[in-house]
Image (cartoon, rainbow, N blue to C red; front, side, top):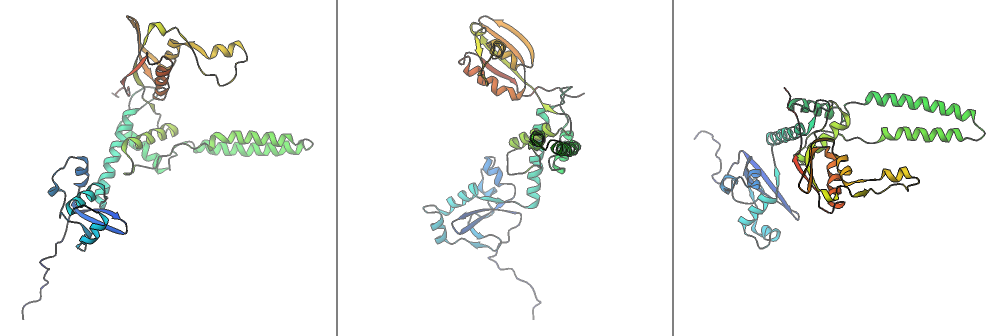
Length: 335
């Protein structure tokens, strides 16, 4: 009797090093088998050879069991498309099922990209020097480990203590002024007003995800770092060149008043020339000159003021003045 042995069926294909791409159409789910780390390269246009992407150029119902999708189901789900076109459709629009190592590598890449963007846009407020990538990463880790709140807990405790003292004072006031009862209402309004700033939600940082772009996550990280200040940070200033015809520099610009002017001083407060208004946006003037019939100023502007400056240049001067970005983030490298 021949020795016992396990024979593998000749028509069975075992897939290793596989990355699945799935697509659901109606109640049916279809899969294709691809090589790892190739689907994203194909979608980005870096990889064009399908043989290097697909392990088997076929559509499956279940890749792990080797169940090929029936032609009848494919015709109902993808009418008028051939099997090769269906494979391309799933490859381009399907959901990638990544493994643990693949997911970890993608998360690490996203983390590195976000931290590099943040490190290039934030500086020390005093020295205007950039922080190292390692310091920014530690600050973000501190925020994420503490649920987005790195500082301010002691202040919150002090506020709670102050609130308790205010409440005790309001009780004393209420017992002392039982005739009118106005003291209680005034104290209540004061406590509500005092608690409003503390209750205002600050941006939180909970860590990097692969569901959002690196740029949007970097903006969230910068807002959270600036709000909680685990290390002293501020947005790096922008360097702009602003040009404006000299003929309109002295034109009076009247800003929209939020309150009706009751006297001469309030009326003067909302008036100013075009030049004065432009210079009010510039935090530090680097150079200022008149070239022919155009006035030019080069200086540093806070990123938050750039949008307002652009709107003023386009509306108040009817597009005759222009603001040109010379540097998105002016920083000084540390020694």
